[in-house]
Length: 278
Image (cartoon, rainbow, N blue to C red; front, side):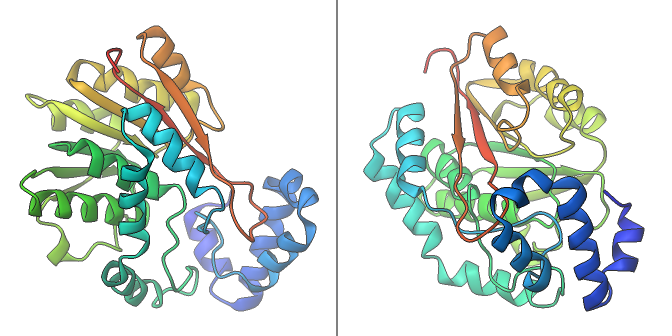
């Protein structure tokens, strides 16, 4: 893909955004567009987003059942937390106010698989969550909302976000950062320092999507994982790094693949690596 500078330069106008999206579809998402040509055309001509696609998904019940099996809970309990986030009008309004200021973002937040992140935090009540790869901060907002509700129920926790982009996390306001620390640094150097003396309950990997980088994050955090520590990968549908790590560490691994509604992109997934005792 083009550099961030070129992307900003090209997408400052409507015609520039259309041209950029047409290029992206033709050269990076061609196989997906061939399967859904009308949706790809609609994306090129009308969609505000040019990257980091968001959408609603069709397979909520499958998500609930997968998480229930992984975490040893009832699907009804997972569904309750899923409904809690998807029905959170206050959070949606807060995020919409910020999203509307951007011409390259949808004006309403669509969480997709990130609902699964929220449910995991509500179910596990972790004391420490780390998210590598923050981008806009939509995932961070979801994680922080779950931690906020946990704290109100007597289970405090905090989130560390790590990203190399100084503009990352712009969706999170100063008022919402009480339990949040954003670190602008490569995860390779930030993780050992930030985790020193701590027990990591949940890692969400969403940073550089190469096998080597993803695998290195798992090697780094392994000594810091708590006995009940869980790892989520936002890239497990594309690369086997978390599956390989889980196999080597004798940790159960499950992949959930989302099914987007009304989008040419076929969706990503959640790779879930549980403690060996799960």
